[in-house]
Image 1 (tube, rainbow, N blue to C red):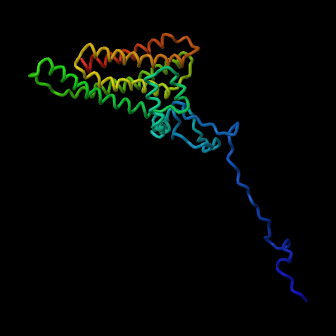
Image 2 (image 1 turned 45 degrees about the horizontal axis):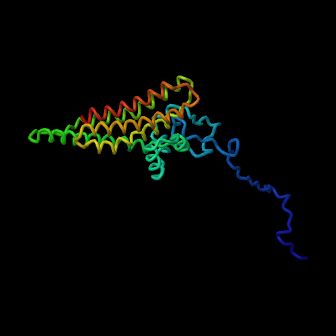
Length: 267
């Protein structure tokens, strides 16, 4: 009697013999159109900052909303706006000198706060340093024997004026447009107004020249270019809406900042 191999023995009658169940891995469900909706440019940012597409689970009640104001106080919420290449920042700095094209079209995909932050910080210290230097040069020119002291208060004034202007003016126009029924992007406003201040950095260096008429020409040219940059791009943004008064207001505020810089720091 030949021995049957183990492979030929029937196993269906054995207790506990059940077929193996193989579960196929389910791919994460994508949104309509094959892509998960993610919007990094909505302000205020959602709590916890940026999440990878598909990481949220609507069924567990933890889905984050783009209009949750708690994200305003989360540092991680702003990290996407600082993830920008140097070439992009340089291109935007150059564009602030030549306001012939729509600046919002350049920053539409990825508005950043990295450039505006460093522009504002650099301008604060340059106004404080060069403002004191200009005062020293003018006083030495008029009376070489006169004692001169460094005015540390310039740092506080420059910080309050520049940071306050760069944050509060865009915020004010944001709420005004919200009131009139428009839906602007506050991050884009902060980005555009921040880059508009860059022209005052080289101008503050030239304002050291101890020739008063030349100082006024420099600050008027810088203020005019900066005001044109803000008003022309703001006009692009509110195109199709009767907001001419807001455009003029934005132009005047930018020019008023230039006059204040000249009168207070380089008198």
